[in-house]
Length: 153
Image (cartoon, rainbow, N blue to C red):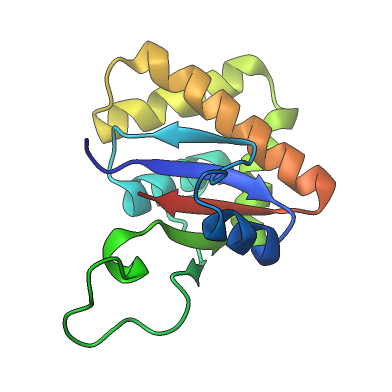
């Protein structure tokens, strides 16, 4: 199995850490999963398209594993070796994605298609509903005062 990312909403870091502590439940949050693109730069470009700007950099704060990156090898079973690697996204990113919920379906599809083509994602027809789902999660997070998170496993 390859690397997968789950983009999800949660009421805060505490809820996420509780989910990490009980791996049988994690991720037990409203979200969407992706396995078919390079995560950081691709998501930056999606948000830039959503905002109608040339560039956007998602500001992430790592919440798990906690603490600074280890220096040197880590023991088997260490979260720095096993993951998941969870980061909280900035509010501006959440709100830029959520704002797509208020535009027409055609405009959301236009952004999704432009992003898919720019990233070389195929089939494009599968990318559009994924972006629509991500926008729904971002809007629900914004409306509930929650954060967006990314978990890479």
